[in-house]
Image 1 (cartoon, rainbow, N blue to C red):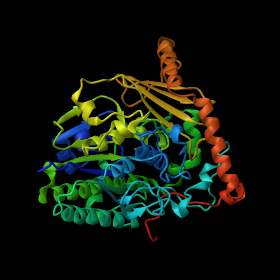
Image 2 (spheres, helix red, strand yellow):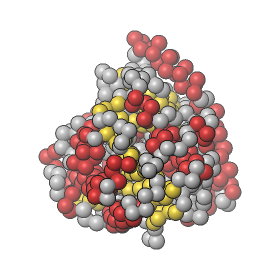
Image 3 (cartoon, rainbow, N blue to C red):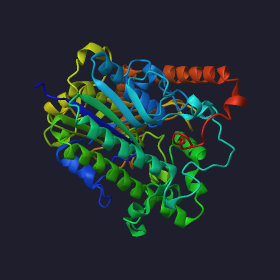
Amino acid sequence: MHELKNVVVIMSDEHNAAYMGCAGHPFIKTPNLDRLSRRGVRFSSAYTPSPICVPARAAFATGMRVHQTRHWDNATPYIGEPDSWGHALQAQHIRVESIGKLHYRSEDDDVGFDVQHIPMHVVGGHGMVWASIRDPYITRGDGKRMLGDRIGAGESSYTDYDRAVTRQACDWLQAASRTRQPFVLYVGLVAPHFPLIAPEAFYSLYDAKQIPPAKLHPSKGHIRHPWVNEYAAFERTEETFANKQERINAFLAYYGLCSFLDDNVGQIIDALDSTGLSNTTHVIYTSDHGDNVGARGLWGKSTLYQESVGIPLIVAGPRVHAGTCETPVDLLDLYPTILDMAGADVCATMRNRPGKSLLDIVSLPPEPTRPILSEYHAAGSNTAGFMLRRGRWKYHHYVRFEPELFDLEADPEELHNLANDPDHASILQEMRGALYALCDPEAIDAQAKADQKKLIDSLGGMNVAASMGASGATPVPGQ
């Protein structure tokens, strides 16, 4: 009998890569991700192509960089072009379906799934148009707070939605186990994305005494980089906490949501085990981007620091030997990985896509100097930001602003910017040259703004655009 080659891709939203037991976190409880890691490979240097939802997810779908597809922000959702890995699977007659959050434009678009079950897409098919107004950016005047109206223990439409997604995924796998038809199933969970409301059973796992001291907080004298400070002025989360207790609640809720997410992942893994599908199924767990979780006085994503651009990435299955891989990778690598795991022809569709199958990467010696690019052209930024990771060095290029340079080997927490250190001038120039070998940051910044202006004009101008889109979290289907 022909060997089945199934794939389950689980993508969460806004999961800081450090917030897993298997990543060495001292107290975050993620027993299910830990057991997935023990039987698979955890990639310790995994990144998002863009630290915001829609561009990251379009890059994930297409295997192409943000500036290649020009999905710049949360008002430029994926509509099915360029082709996705789902299209490639369909062309090779492999069953491919989705359950849960996609954050594309519409269920009506052909994005490469045979069926989309309870999908979450951008609001109104257009997303956060108001945040496409940049240079200068605007802030919404509706008074709504990004992290949600309430912070703490309880239930939200997102926790209800994740439970429904998990339940449907488990039922889907039960049915699939009876057909013996190869499949690729994508499961999109929302946690630990705000609103920061965690179910009591998970919120109560944590205590305020566990919250570490503030990292580089402005109240302690830290001076943010000017580009980052512009985002902080746009986001204003710390200023909108009602009191010290609510800030504490925000940490505990994020911790709790990480464990809630883990519980849902565990149910899906259990469904694979109970149906006998584990022996023929590869599992990929990842997130679209990270979260600052209070570092530098910031919450949410949208910066180029490790907290925001770093992502969890774990792969397990029949062709994977357990361990940790230090070669830098990103979501673009999942395009060829999914095809490879599904037994599809990878070369037929890769063309100029920069990704590489993770199955190939883990079979080769570590490649620490493999370059990884991330870029940002969205909410709270007046100019583009680019991150290049290569070896121990991490370079941040901000159009119209001074750069940042970090030595992740000596300074993994990015506490010391070396960009103005004469002893590192040659490294700075080398990293700058490596970035320009991949792209032209200034030209890309101009292209993004031109595309955003064209979108705004097509919708009736700035006055109309300023009122279009959600202030923060995308509503669940039907809300």
